[in-house]
Each structure stands twice: as structure tokens, then as C-alpha cells.
Image 1 (cartoon, one colour):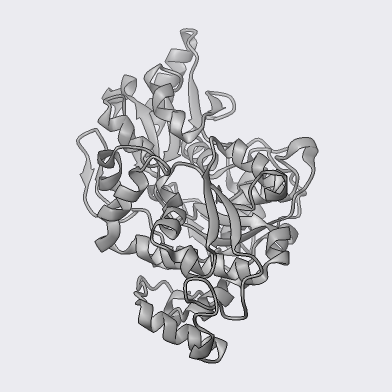
Image 2 (cartoon, helix red, strand yellow):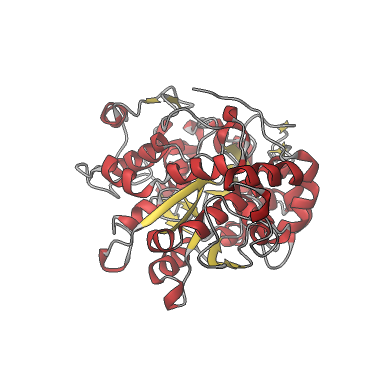
Length: 433
């Protein structure tokens, strides 16, 4: 498997030349609004409604608007709309834009599967979904409240589990917060707790809190720990309420995180518009990866229409500099968020299989659920490859397989996508349906 760290830096002139070659001549350039052409024709529509949650891994969508990538690809009427929670994102995807919902979203990678299967939809009605790209790797964190500051919790939850047990024995409520059942944050915090012997179903209550409300809830003592993306972990530290136990890339290096997904009916009705959206987002991911753009990126993210958080809560971790709030400081963190490098944008099918296997582990999906069949329907890595070809992406940045191979986690467990059942069988703490 090619693991190149090289990130292409296509300038506008080179991109125009490559696109002209793909579509058969420079004469087609300028036939679309903004002076661009997509590889196989004019977009069927110039509009799309895309949802996002106020998190830094949604930055490619913000940048797509602010830096003109959507418009440059002919998608001049893209609306990028803030959602109040992942549940709201789900509900608006179920509605679709024709019923005042949305066409696609920045989304927790397992959610399109939970929506497409009907596992997490009203009345369990399936809504076909398509994953078009991964938006990032790494970049989430597990935070702990300052009540447990003396423990300086990191990867090992042994002492933390003892503190939780003592508090629970005293009659106090003990909660761990994540953002959506079966979503990435739920998977990370459950894996972390279970690896240290802390059962997330028996020893602590696992609750749902929207990302932007995590800090406020920690302030009033609603939870002992939470898992979420930035800037909320850094804000917790800046407000003196808690600290970072770990960044989730320390649990699984270069793990997949958010995805760009759309309703399949939009993709089927608008293949050229879908490709244009995907190309714009891929270019925005390259822009976000470039360190030269990180200060501007933090400024963009801080704006009211996007994350609406102070620049000081955003800039350090966007630049890869992590002060854990415990005296531990890691500059240029090896598990910083990646938007393009390390093949961050490509949606490996093997990663989707891990998420579905973990959802089986925690009882969100039945053990006999046909994961492979749904992956073949939902994961549209073929469209990603088409967009990459149209963009002239260096072959070193395009995986040669839909599998990244065997993955190893911080506790020594391994996941072989050729044998997911062996992984599931190896896990001591689980709740199978």
C-alpha cells in the first residue's frame, strides 16, 4: 500500500491545463459559471444544500465557500448550512432539500450507514446514502474534567476507572459524553474506556451531547469525560474546566473520521454536479493541509457563520501544537488532523467495515448484519477516483486498493478487514445484539 505523505500543490494554471486535457480542449473552459469545466459535462444543477456541525473537520466546506472552490467548479449556488446536532443532520438528510432538508453533509463516517440501513432513522425507514470522500484523519480528542486533574489521565483508564467507581458508589451520577450513538466519537470513547477495563454500558452512563454544548455541560458537572472534535477540547482548557487525556490518533494512528456524504438520489440525478462538488472539496482539503494557510483557516473557522469560536481556541491545534493542559506539550503533533496528506481524502472501504464491526460490538447493529453488501452500496470510492483523475492528482496520492490493510490500535488489538469476526471475537468488553 502506498503511504506517501506527499500532498499535491496544484496551482490554478496547472489545474486548468489538466482539466482542459481531460475534457478534450481548452475551448470548453469558461463554459460554466466561474470559468471552469467539469470533466464529463456541465453540472445538471448549480445548487446543493450541505449541512455541517461547528467543528474544524468541516473546514473543507467552509473553505469551499470562502475561497471560491465551489463556484470555480460551476456550483455557484451551494448553501453550507449549520446544523445544531448530528441528530438534526440525520433528520434533514432524511427530509432532503425538496422537503426543506439538505442534500448532503459533513458527517460522522458511520452515520450514512446507519441512515441507509434504517438503524438510526424515524420508523427505521432506510434512506439511500453515498459516501464520496473522507474529510479528515485524526483530530478528535478525549477530554477529562478538572475534578480529575490529579490523575492526569492519558491512554490508560485504570486509575480513572477507580475514581469513577468510587464516585458512583457514593451515589453520584457519572457520565461519559459523545455526540451521536454509533458515531465516531461514540466509538473512540467506548474503545478507550473498554481497553482499560471500564465498561461503557455498565460502569458509566454514556450520554449524547451536541459538540458545541460539550464545554458548557462540563462546566456544570454533567460528565466526567467527553469525546469531540476541536475547538471544544482546546476551549475546555482555555476556560480552565478540564484537560485533554489523548488525541484519538493516539488510539488509532491516522484513523478515519468525518466523511462527505450525499443522498444517493442527488448523486444519481446529478452526476456532473456531484463530481464538481467532490472536486471542489478535494481542492479545499489540499488548501487546508497547507501550513501556509493555517492562520487564515483559523480565521475562517472562527467566523459566526461557521464555528463561531475565538481564534485562540482554534489556531494551536490547527497548526498541530497540543498543550494537553496537564504540563504535557507536543509541538507538530504526529497525530494532528490531516485533510489531504496520508491519503486522508480517500474513503477506504476497509475503514467503513471497521465502523460497522464496532457498531455490531456495541449492539447498534445485529451480528448477522451484512456489512459488505451495504458498503458496496454506500461507499462510492469509484466517484472519488473519477474526481481525482479529473483533477490530475498525482498517482502517489491515489491508493491502489480499497483496503488499507491490517490496522493496529493502541492496546495491541488488530483489525484485519479480511476477517472482521476474529477482531470482534478478540474484544473482551462488548454488548452484542
